[in-house]
Length: 344
Image 1 (cartoon, rainbow, N blue to C red):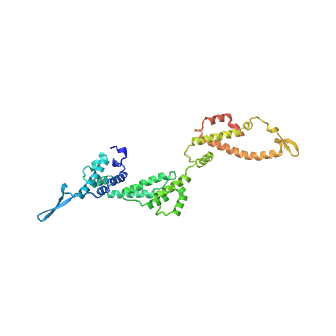
Image 2: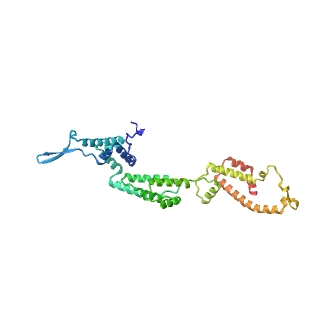
Image 3: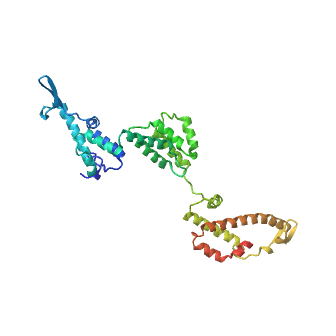
């Protein structure tokens, strides 16, 4: 029968790795054969015996197979089913450990001792996993799913060693292990839910929904602020994406265009010769108007501040991304000398 077929008739395979997972699967498989099969594996199959008297002495001997009762035959059948499942489930290397036993309990126990150790060893492992459970915390840069996967490994390891962690303890552990960004959700759960009765799966769904709606990373449309913040912090380790580079390119091109006086009027209209018509007559040239000069003076101060900020920002962006900007930037810069840019 093909082991990869996934049929329930075939026991889970064990090659010596990940015994805890195999043990849980094998327990379920043996139970699916018959509850009495699993019971025989756990409690064993005492071979039928009978007592005989020789004179004044009474001796216990094994009962001959043909003298077994129906209950003893059924018990032995369950033992053989369990033993056959174990023999079939293990690799040839693991089979060497159990090939000499004729009861399913003996085979099961020797595999358990071999891969879990004695009670002393199991106690030491359990203590180690308990410490891991208490000290595990969710990192700032990992998702809740990644954290919960780590927690599940520890919880399942304790369970395979015979120490099942109560569900309410797991719930409380999850809540106190979450980072600060989950604090609003933690407070809401503690306020309206009873942590002693809250199911782990309910808590997981609630936290994942909150993370998806409120904590999912959103790409900023304003790449400039992102770069400025990274420049100030001095600890950015990520390069700009292609989309961000495209945005930077377009913005810098627009900046260069706005700094070129020729681009403001493709027809070359001479605005200096335009006259201003006041209520008291068709008066003077607009460039010589006192009101115009005042507006230009006020606007120039604002423009100088804005222009200098734009220049500083643009060159900062170019400096941080010069190795990724495409050749369009180089061509654009060749059209407008840097010296002209500073004089505008």
